[in-house]
Image 1 (cartoon, helix red, strand yellow):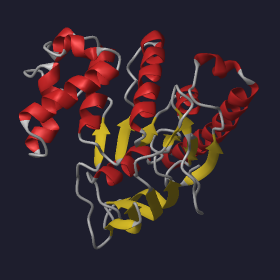
Image 2: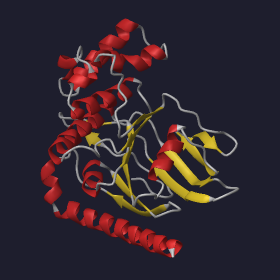
Image 3: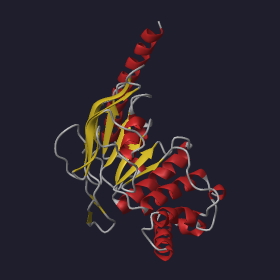
Length: 296
C-alpha cells in the first residue's frame, strides 16, 4: 500500500483463471515535495513536504477538501508544473527535482475531467494517434493494437469508425483511457474523470475502469472528491490536508479484487469510508475557519 515512507509491496490480483497477475512497473516515490506559487509575492504554499510511496501497479486515490493540492501534485507528476523542493523518482530513477524540471512524457499519461478527444478524428484514429505521433509503431501495428484494445474494453471496436460527438460521455471517457493505455505508460494519471457523470453512468464507468486496470496492471493515481469512488476503486486512499497540502491519513483498502458493487455494503468498506470522511471533514472545517479569519 502507499505510505508516507517505507518499502511497499505491489498489490496482487488474479485473472479469471485464478492466475496471479504481476504489475508492469511504474513505482513512484514522492519525497518531501513542496510547491510555492508566487514566492516573491503572495507566497501561496500549495504543497508542503508531501511524501508518498506508490508500488508498481498500485491504484492510489487522492482525496481531500478543495484547494488541498491534489491537482497540483498530479500536474507536477505529469510534468505540467514544477516543484519548489523535494524529489520524485520513477522506478528508482530520479524523475524531477528543483534542478531537474520534470517534462511531460509517454511514461506518464493524464486523463482530465473534461474530454480531450479530437472531434475531427474517428475513435480508431484517436486511439492510434499517440504511437503514430511518437513514431513508435507503424500504421498497421497501431491499428491492430487499437482494435484489440477497443474490443477488449467493452466491445468498443464496434464504434471504431464513429466520431466522438456520436458517442455518449461515458463511451468518450472510455476511449480516452484506452488512448492513454495505447502508449503503454508506466503511470496513468486520472483527474476526476467521472465527476460530471450521473450516478448510473459513474457506476458503469467504475466497472469499465476496474476491468481496464485488471487488464493493464498500470500504476494509477486517481484524484476524486467522491469518497465512495475512492474506496471502491483503489488499493490505497490518501487523505490530504487543507493547504498547504500534505498527507494526513493513509488507508489501506484490503477489499479483494475483482471488486463488485455488493462490497459497498460490507462492514470493511463502510468503516474505510467513515475514516476517510472524518479526515476530509476535519480538514474542510479547518479551511473554512481559516477562510473566515482571513476575511475578517
